[in-house]
Amino acid sequence: MRKHEKKRDYKFKFEDSVSLLVFSGVLCFAVQGFADQKVDQLAKAESTQLEVRQKQVMEINKSLKNVIEENQRLSSHNKNLEMEVARLRNENVSGKGLYENLKKDHDSLNGNISQIQQKNQIYSQEINKLEQDIERLQLAKNDAVKEKRRLQEELSVADSRRDNKTNAVFQVASATDKEVKDRESKTMNILSRIDAFAEEDEQLRMDSARAHYNMGNIYYEKGEYEIAAREYYQAVTLMPNDPDAHYNLAFVSAEFLNDPKTAIKHYQTYLYLAPSAQDAHVVREKIMHEQLILKAKVDSPLEKE
Image (cartoon, rainbow, N blue to C red):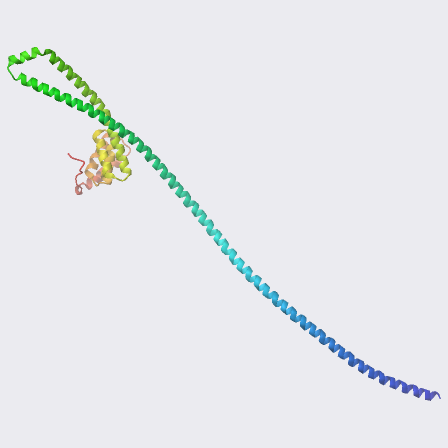
């Protein structure tokens, strides 16, 4: 009884095992399919994420490349700007220097113009004074000439009378004693006027000489050396004891007019009037130099011996 029951128990267990085995196989197959599905899903998800990430990386690389290129462009532009700033600074410094030089030249030119205007004003005043003195002197000279002619005519008449008979001459002399005294008085007046004229002429001569000397300096500065030489020549004619006038005439004649004869003469006069001058040795050398080239030069039209 007990053995039969045991056999039935055993059969039951075998069927159960088979069922369990089948169930396990089905379950394993189901689990395997589910797992494969999950793996496929995960693989697809990861592939999608990878593609997205690759696209993101590509976009980032592209953006980074653009940023690098823009940075390079900005860096190059910045260098160009720095070079332009440096160039502008140099031009600014150069422009300032040019402006300062132009300003100095302008100020110097204005100063020279002012000096020339002052000199011209002084020379104009001297010339006006000289013209007035010349006019006054001319009037006095005309009066003196008229008086001299009148006296000469009277003396001529007296001489013709004196050529007559001796007796007639004595008669004329005794009869015109008062007239002779009048003539002597008039002659003294004329002489005094001539003396006064000589004093005025001396002052006028000095003023005229200085005026010619200054005009010579003006023409020398303007480069009109022939006219300057003429003015210096007038100065030494009116004022022969002025060493500076002789030196200027000699210098212009030697350096600009190729006239060694005039230069030697007035250099020597300069040394005679100013033997202790500081430039005496230089003037002597100039004389020797002009003497060496004298043979090939013509006489000066200003120097007439």
